[in-house]
Length: 108
View 1 (spheres, rainbow, N blue to C red):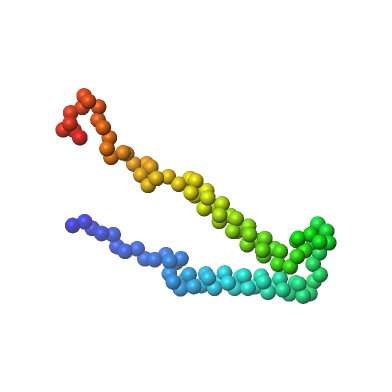
View 2 (cartoon, one colour):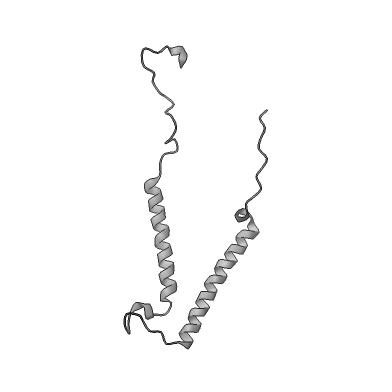
């Protein structure tokens, strides 16, 4: 019988409690930035850097810009992964190699 390796303990990121914590931290960070944006809207007149009516003076411009940039990076990574993908047996020797005629069949 072969010795089977002992089952590996789950990494920290694989534990359900850790995943819940990470999701809660993500939601908390999003809620905090939206809350700060609302506070800034209420207390500060926002001026665009490129003029009175430039898009960077709009409400929630920077959160939307960040979300759009992340979405585009994810789509670009998926496209790049599909473009660079190789077959599963890319580095393996082909199984049905034909030997030259002068080699004995018993060596196969």
